[in-house]
Length: 259
Image (cartoon, rainbow, N blue to C red; front, side, top):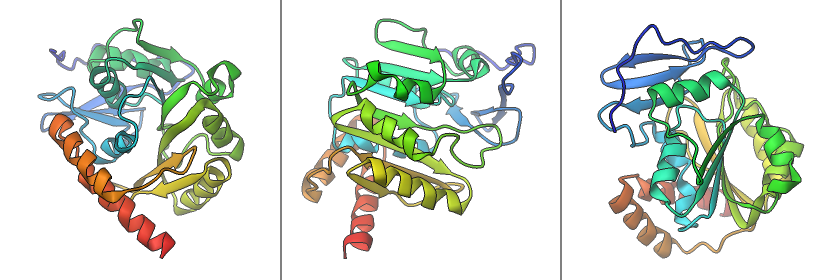
């Protein structure tokens, strides 16, 4: 896939939403929403690879779900997770709710996001509307939540009602991964609200700039670490993601929280 060169003539600043802009440094193109916060990144020489480590961690559900039928992304970012799921799981539908049309446009133009087809459905809409819509309940195997505004102070949606609607959207063994970024008080609040709606919630250790990934299970999984390490090895082989690190993180979390 060829990635177009950056060009200052392309503007992604439809009114009513933060403008989408890019910077490039040492072969990595980053997405910004009118501020210096990085909202996503792509290495130009490896456009289909997930560049940022915390974004890779959002794929931790792969340890538990091998063949998802429906993956939903709330908040498109630079499209890294959406492209990855669309390419790696050819039998899955991938749906995206992204409020900012500038983000959708810049992902198509500058980050290699494919056009919608029978498997890919990127919609300009509010993420809350997506999960509150009863038509979407019990239809989603994997929900990836990465919702930030241009200030990046914390998740835009973090109420008990939002997380309950996320849980309602999932199938019986569905999994949600969430990037919880921002001030420390956010972590506590998000964790409490997730725990009200989900059977089990696990936090992975911070890897980058205060981004912490939480994994929420609609039903508590059976955890057999020897099986998970085996799966992690297979994931590493096929995707080059550091899945063993995810299992280590899960293990240390369980040791800390279950004695």
